[in-house]
Length: 82
Image (cartoon, rainbow, N blue to C red; front, top):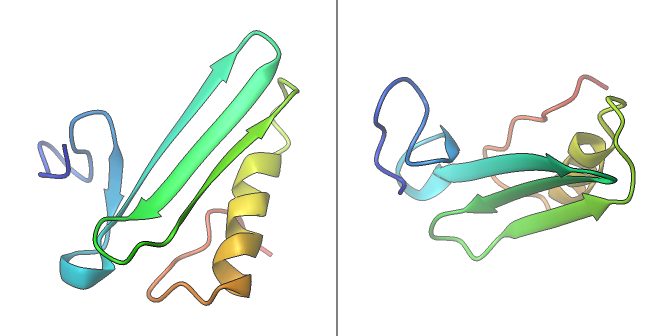
């Protein structure tokens, strides 16, 4: 699932970084919920966010960015501009 297929995409997951800094992400939306998962392939770091709203505010990305900053994820590029 984490082998680049075309561009920065694995099998259903967006990929960033390489080697020990390889991390993956996937977002989703159901009626009433927005979700985002970001995790490192080999570091044991990650976050899964689910909010009970369908909005395009970027709330899930901002929450993951806050977790990444608080826990000092290495080589992480924020999903939102601060």
